Image 1 (cartoon, rainbow, N blue to C red):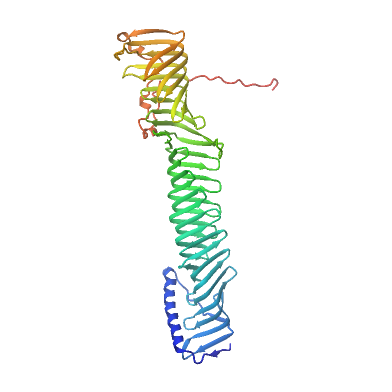
Image 2: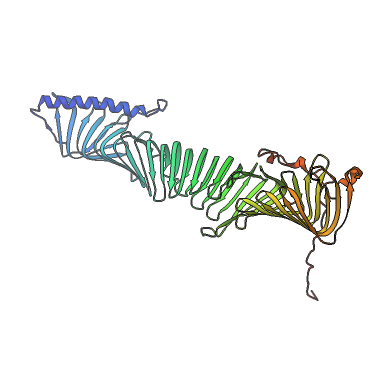
Length: 549
């Protein structure tokens, strides 16, 4: 190759350039190797080969180690091609500086362009500066300073960068990208922007092959009215599925979910939380807690189990509900007439200061504000106990309006440790005024056992009656008036009442089953043997078949 020697070059200018070059090489080498593990073996690269230059200049007296190549310069080294406008080549160190429109090509999958590049052929490390663009398959990295290690297929930037990858744009102050694994690491002021969501984080690992982002440190994922706060999570940008760890918080409009771990599918709107979960529905003023919670936002369905609990804080006094499993169904979703139905089954218990209950299962309808209790249900209020085969409670706003007891109805009021007012019948309707009973209506085989008091509040005796219909009118927690039809009964002076006559045949007092506080709702108590309700034969529609079949 032909060349010319530089004559009469200004010593001061050349010396200044050499000093800058030495300082830059020392600093850049420290930056490169500080990011590479010392445990990794580094093979020695072969000699860099010059393929072409329009002009070659060399001055053995002023800089014997450097050759200057100008015009359409190209190098080849270990399978990589490098093109530039001009270059300073250092044969002793097997390295060169490239200037102008610098391009480094490795096969048809990797290209690196910049305005300046220093390449060390021995270590196979390239240091690109100013308007740097690294392209690897469908991934493009933009930065102003990039060091690329060819041995470990690793490039990193330290003065801000942007990675664009099929709809995702990631920016950060510091980043690293491995072309062999297609794994990227971003630190400090990390932001991932997609047309559907935005992720901000302290540290983000991103795989451009599977489109999986791993977040560590305080991070936020926002999309419309939905927001996720997490400090450790995996997020698939392709499927919109995320796994959130370490008590992450998922907020969707007026709903908030927290759990030790949360799995969320943004496409389907399905979220699952595990271990010590909290789901707060601020619109309906309900909080679900438990070991597992499932929620489908698209249809408004929820499920909870494992020490599951519902707290209703719509009133001044919070209602605590427990069951083995809770399910919530939403009807007329996204309309003004939306309502929900809550099912709780097996070992349901509730506690509120003015009311407690137990039952095998329950159902609450927010549309007509009704609570149905099934399977040996019992309701307590103050010193009163109501039980039957089914209990239906109707609410008016935040207060109870009435209670309907179906089949084997029994209401017991404790007066002292021995005496109880008792009313039994086939069906019972209790009506409330505020938190006090104003009327008790009983129909069908009605039995009444009542202890009246005189004007000095002294118990005078016991009244036993039988009828088909009874209406008790209450005032200030006392019987004001009794209305009945065709009643037969007997009054017994208190001193002549034998102990067996103090109780109706249906009498049972289940104080031992009554929840004592909000923590006691998890402690189920079975009825003492012999106190269960009698089995009732229900009418069954006969099977109808056509003749000849």
